[in-house]
Length: 616
Image (cartoon, rainbow, N blue to C red; front, side, top):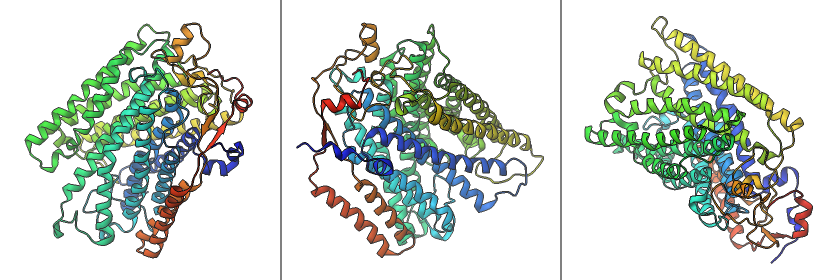
């Protein structure tokens, strides 16, 4: 049943609130991640100011603990994760030749759940205090309101809501990649970014349920005085650690594998060469994803699980270095002999390689259980995971932004400002985190808000804070670049980088239906294959015809708002409000179930008006 085109004539803020277009949802994910990145960055900067001098009293005690908890939680759950979902939404359907994701409504719901979960967590700053149990929220300190006030309630419910959104996103992209690839797009012809998105979607499917279960148990401990994690009532705190790290360690690979995928797109494009060892890169990606699940216990070497368990998980952890090393060497061999262009996207990729390798080396050091007993809870661990997450994921996110910005927004980011951004960030990153290895070895514990003078920790902490100033300046340059580009940036052509994959075959930004005709795929690097054959556009796999599109809907936002409202009811033990919020959510689900909505169609003559210049 065809509907009028006017159903899509929504404009302004209403258009964004109701959209189910994966590209707009991708932009909203990126914008929200940017907002939380600024918040989390400010929190980190304030912590470094406190630690700049010994015996400093700028942010002490509970305030420092809140900053530390919110920084870690925000950066992991509300910056890195949504930014990755932003890229997946903006790029994956284009790379596989699909017109949409499998479940557009669910996609919108996933975004609003994530966003309102993040807002709920940050409301805690203004409602009596943010959580202060660390981003890992170890029980029993975090499971009892005797110790933490309401801050941890915001943590539990904020993460629960946003985690549901992430789980929906993972399922959506699994189905999309399996079922919606263009004809000829076999698994072994998929771009590496799509491959990494596929693997992390599977990881999300298995990693998030343990976190959900753990948060529900903590929810019952805190709100209804259950005893899952209270030893005095028969509970066991180690259960929380297992549940958290069964999620937490795959989460590292959920964050870093898409960055690997971005580098695997950027480096071949700017080396003008096919990715070296494509098949080995695919198998390395799958193997890293598998092994990532097998090693969570290395976060618990000092818990007392015994030498046999520690040995097994130490070996499994060190084994991850093998497929990771394959990737590093394949990127280097791709660069070898290539016509390298030092664009901002590419220098972020090149800067990532030594930075991440260093994080990998310290990871192997931590994987040795006897050594881990020495490094445990020291600043050495802080340096390691920042080298992995910041040196891996964040470098990848910036590379991806400079690479795909023209396709997403239709304008080119300024390259001069981009290079200023890179060098300030790269130098600041190493000045900040390299000294922290030494601080850890010299005995500085993590999670402390001060230290005594003349114990060998003064200079390292001072230098580390100076590095944070560099990184802050880099972010300001990037934000200025975004504003300047939005107003005066050069308009992007369809294929500004001489790209290899399908997204570069369509206009910038992509039209709402992505491809006027679904393309026929004839090899790996599908668009490059056609260009080398002398074709200026992809071969279509179907005649030009009407395109079915899903209807926009406000229900995902209202459903998420229902859970948002309900959370306040649970936090303050007002079960009328909690029930009312849940009622809103269930009412939306009921309406969605009975509403007969077939979407609408775009006719070929309407396409030509909308999409002048499309080449597919």
